[in-house]
Image (cartoon, rainbow, N blue to C red):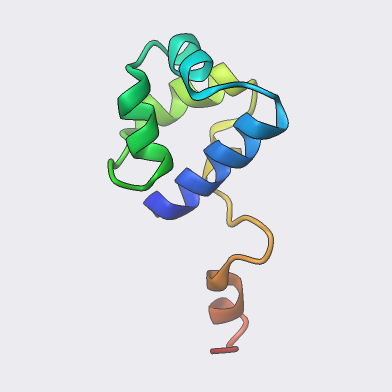
Length: 80
């Protein structure tokens, strides 16, 4: 799950043209901690997911859904 969260945060952040530093500021967290979440090195709490969702102006579920072309989609479809 951390890799899915990481991919979605990065994808949405870049789509909105926001730097890690700006997103961290908006979410009230340290930039290095956010970087760790984006690299899937840190696991985010539910509260952190909520704060990041608010900072990105998306719903929390948008941060947790499988991104297009993710390997898990092939596994769920029964394709190795």
